[in-house]
Image (cartoon, rainbow, N blue to C red; front, side, top):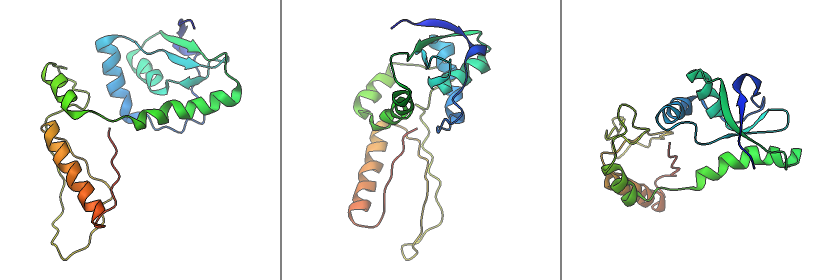
Length: 172
């Protein structure tokens, strides 16, 4: 495989991209600004994006003229279609080792942009009493430290096991 530099203007976003990338553009842009473009985009033979739509949008916002790419010229059209989905989906299976993460973060300063590794604990609560059944569709939590996350995660698991809640956790 060979990384090539390709003009951003020659790259075509995949028209049926099922991912909503808007919220990820700023962190990717910040990453490129701080560390350079370290993860090449993947294109098919017609310069259509196979993987890297968020990097493409970030590069546009940064005004980059060229970006590094790899061509998926050894894949069939069906394999390319599958890879577009699998490349994004597999990242959802990864989990953080919060003890190691806390150790790493203690040594680092990301400056003005913390990539979501912040120290604010925010819980948006509604007035609930024990006799009222409520459905919560989404809660955003930001933790002061990793142990806070582990406490909340354990409580959510207990609620789910007691049949009092259906829990779905999404890390962003």
